[in-house]
Amino acid sequence: MIEFSLIACGPTVLCSHQFGANNYEAVAASILPNIQTSVAAKTSYTSNSNVVFHIVVENGLIYMCAADTEMGKRQPYAFLNEIKRQFTSGSLANRAQFAGEYELNRDFGPVLENQMERFSRDGTGGDQISTLQSQVEEVKGVMTQNIEKVLERGERLEELMEKTTDLESNAATFKKTSRQVHRKMWWKNIRWTIILAVVAVLVIGIIIIIILFSTGVLPPKSGGGAATPLPSTTTSRPL
Image 1: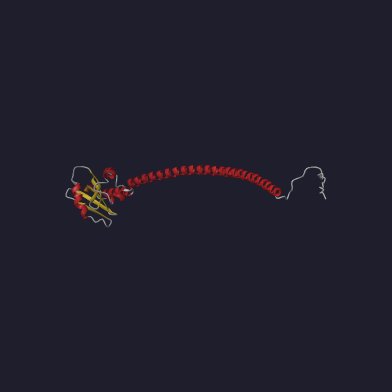
Image 2: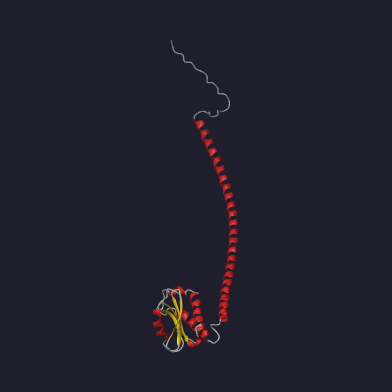
């Protein structure tokens, strides 16, 4: 049976879980400072209580479990590989570099408990077929999520296409309306231009006529009939 497990970053225990009342935490605390995390490694330590501490080191993280000596090494190491896979598949591995003591216990503690129970059962856990089935189920879940995302993305694309069609229709209507307004305004400007031109011509003509009359170039028209000459009178002076 797997009685204790933890994940640590150097001597800092990030999360752990234990079955029973044995003082595995103290034993683990004495082992962690002696583990080199700069290189990947796999090792086992036998304690005085017929319990073996199995350890896997990878990418600066320590995965440890305590199991009965009767379990051998296959199932404990299968357990460590499984929790390592699950821990590094999410964002916890990035948080682990800056996390404090037991900071990830709430996030990953239940996973440790479930996997400890699973790998402690006879004939399960270390069995390759069981591991493969678990991985297949996980892949199926990931593929299902990907398909759902693709379908959701397809619906969004359809919405975008509809919006694009509406925008094109509105743009065509706006272009047609603006052309009509432009033509109407053009004719209105032309009419006002013609009216102003005619008024200007009339005003200029009137001014020219007034100037011509005032300068005598165009004499005023006289009344009808010839004028009767007045008789001439002579005044005689006395001699």
